[in-house]
Every structure is written in structure tokens, then in C-alpha cells.
Length: 482
Image (cartoon, rainbow, N blue to C red; front, side, top):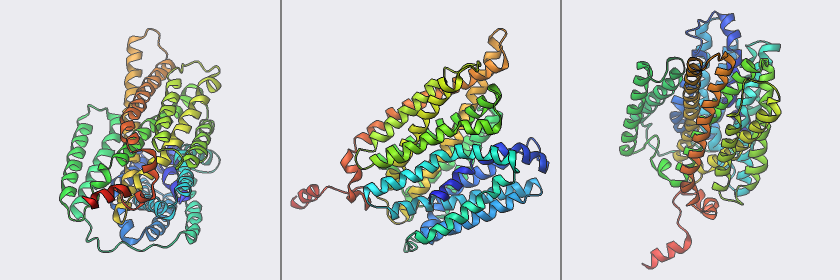
């Protein structure tokens, strides 16, 4: 399951560094090169809710296998690409199978590991891959592009998928969920259209700006479609996304926390890539290796801290400090300058450690809270919603924070006498990271009442594993007496 998670997260970033080489080899235009990234994100983010429902209908284990095989085949096809259309089409196919694979993996994790401490350790390992996968993708992309070929950034998925496929012999079989009726077709169409419009709007905001008619039109369309989706789901007899998945207090806190954490962190990865290469003069490989610190810290946070402490402390005791730790890392980076002396030990290393620990402490408890208590199709719906929250957060983070950075850079060049391009770029990065810091602090403030009011023991009670609204035994006795 962790290997499958690595596939999904890795492909969100590994192609980024390889894109210039692929563009040159296949003759992709500057205007069309972004579709190599966008095709994957749109298919993945847009089809997640449908993928969660199909996972339940097929059986999570079977859907997991289908997703792995399809993802490997699409990756191999992409590596063999001879023209831009073939590469972009294979990336879209990767996104389609990732939308089936991601909720199936999280659902299997939820149904396989049920004991509290065992579940904490399992989700810790799973989250470590998710937290470090983006950084690993940048590192692997640089190494493979420089020493092999850009095509290996796609071929590498095949052996990982085969490894995960062999591991399915250890996954307990499950049965398709029956008696749930037909697929909610209106809900499926509205969710796909709304999510695709929203993700595409965030993606287009980076090159065109938030005031672009195209971006505003896509955002308005996405909001209206998703609002219509909510209305349809409230009335549907067998909804694609039951509203009870979202209105549960602790689950809502988990969704808010992970969405805004990914918003801040994907902007962080973008700026660290730019800063290390454009300002410090690092090679792509050196820039990727710098993020090893963040990946290792995320591994420690998810396995040694969150994985071991889950069940002994409340989820809030992991999520809220994690958000604050990541915010502290962002705050350190707001002190960056264009001077390159002692940047790594004074700023980059501490920030990498804090943001990695924060991300590692947030992912496991939010993933558990998002899926605990779900049964039947609700398990797939909750898993898909959790993955969709991550995708939307990442897409919005890259678009929003990059727009803030470029605007601040342009303003600095206009208003500062004798400003150098390097100093102006760093000013833009630090301005955007200041916004990211504020977002993480605000997230902690908003999520705290949703998470803390639930109470530590109630969060881990085994009664909560069968229904999200389980009542304590004494309350049931009182109700019976009444």
C-alpha cells in the first residue's frame, strides 16, 4: 500500500525536473508543455470521488490491483512516447488509474489495520511515503534526467508497481459492496466537472494571474458545479459523497488541516527548488538532495512520533503542534536574503527539519480521522475525499503562492532603487512564505475547536470504528430508561 502511495505522490513532481528535456526531445511548444503536468493533475483530482465509489463496487483489493496494472502500463507508454500527444495522453491515463488506486489503498489500510496502536504505526508508514514522496520525486527526477534519460522518470513506476503488485498476496481479500444501487451519475458528472474546473483554474492562475477572465470564469464555473453537486448529493438516494462524511466535526477538522497544510507545503517545495537553483546556483541534483533533510524529517515525524503516539494522545495533540512546527519553518525562511553565506545551516536546514516534522505529524492522524467510522461505500468516499483535499490544496498552493511571489517581485523591482533580479526574487519568495506562515497559524486556530472538543479517548474508542456517531454505553442506558 505504501509503494502504491509512492507512485501516486512521486508522479506529482518527478516529471517537473524532466520536463525541459522531454520538451526538447519531443518538440513540445512552450504554450503546450504545461499539459504534461496538468493532464495528470486534472484526471487525478477530477476523478477521485468516482474512483472511490468504483473501488467499493469492485472491492478495494481488486480495485487496488487494477489501478496498479493500469498505472504501470500508462507509465510505460509515456516512457515510449514519440510525440507530445502520446506523452500527454499517457499522463492523463496515469491520473485516471491514480484516481482509482489512491482511495483503494487508503480504504485497504483502514479496513486491514483496526487495532489502535497497529493502525497508528501502519498509517505512520503510509504517511511517511506521502510526506516524503514529493521531495523524493524532485530528487529522483534530477538524478534520472541527468544520468539516464527523462524517459526513466516514467519507466521507474513500472518496477515500483510490480513490487506493490507482488505485495497484494499479503492483503486480505475483501468483497465488493453490494446493494448500494447504481452509480450516482448526476453526482459523478458534477463532481468531475467541478473538480476539473477548479484544479484547472488554480493551474491557469500561475501564468495568467488571478484577475484573468479565463481564471475567474473557471473558478466561477467550478464553484457553481460543486455547489450543484452538494445539492444533488443531499437529495440522492445513493449519493456519491454522503454529506455525513463531511459534517462530522473531527473529520471536518482533518479535511481542513490537510488541505491547508498541502497548500503551504507545495508552495514551499516550489520556492525551495527556485531558490536553491536560481539564487544559490545549485544543480538540479543538488537542489533535489537539499530536500533530503525535509524527507528524513517527515519520515521521523510520521513513524517515530505520530505512528508511535497515536492512540496514546489525542489527534489534536499531533495535528496542532505539527501545523505550528511547519509554520515555524516557514517563518525562518522569511529571513532569507540573496546572500549565499551560511544559508544552509542557518536557514534551510532548520526550516527543512521543522516543515518535515510538521507534515509528518499531520498526515497520519488526519488520514485516520478522515476514514475512521466509515462503512460500505462511505469508506471509499471518505478516502477519495481525503485525497481530493490534498490535490486541491496542492494545486491552489502552487497557483496562489506563486502569484503572490511574482507580484511581490515585480513590485520590488518597480519601487526599489538599484534592485537586483536575485534580491527581487528572494523578496517575492519570502513574501509568499509569510503568507504560508499565516495560513498555517490560521489553520491551527480554526482546526483546534473542531479537534479538541472531540476528546482524546473518544477519538480512539473502538466503538468509533463502526459508526462515526457511536454513543457511549451509559448514554444508551439512559436513553433506554427514558
